[in-house]
Length: 284
Image (cartoon, rainbow, N blue to C red):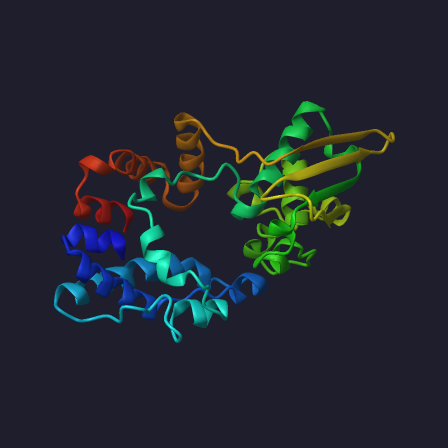
């Protein structure tokens, strides 16, 4: 909505109108993640569509409530159950900078909150040259933000998994994939029913340490010879531009072919020089 409003050149009053319209069109349910159904796949598209509709409504003079976020019957009350005392100050705290240009490709095909855990497991596997068939057990210790957050049920899910949507959100399954294949990307996530992956996922134990802040975690792998290998930290792995390009090409080419994938990457890498029409045509 904010992006659409900016592109339409709306003034601050109409931007507030647009945001109010979008709040009333917002979704945000996560039940589909628990059941492995695809509703979440459409959420971003619907958000973009509704954002544009909201901005167009405001542009054409449709008023929006001034307290849609923090009012007694507003968004926070509906989705959070209560309105914080400082809710009226939220607009002043909103950043002036658009974050979309800084969004990049995840290095692993898992939900964001378990990225540091998967990264630690991959690094430990490589650093200690651990073979997947030597692993006796795996212990993951993470803070409550990971194990008790909104996605906890999905993260702690030990299977069986209906599809890869469930699988890549599950920490035991993602760890199993990472330790078996050395990474978690679309071509390895699709092997979530692999017998080796299932065996590894079955020996993963996830614990909570209340003292672990943010995404800090530790991974301990015990091998059949009794050795224990450990690593800890909360690094959010980042990729160099060339690595991002390689991973994006690998993922996209599976669905649209190499030629179309190359075209998409070219357009995305030159967003500032491309028109909205060319971007839409490329991604359609």
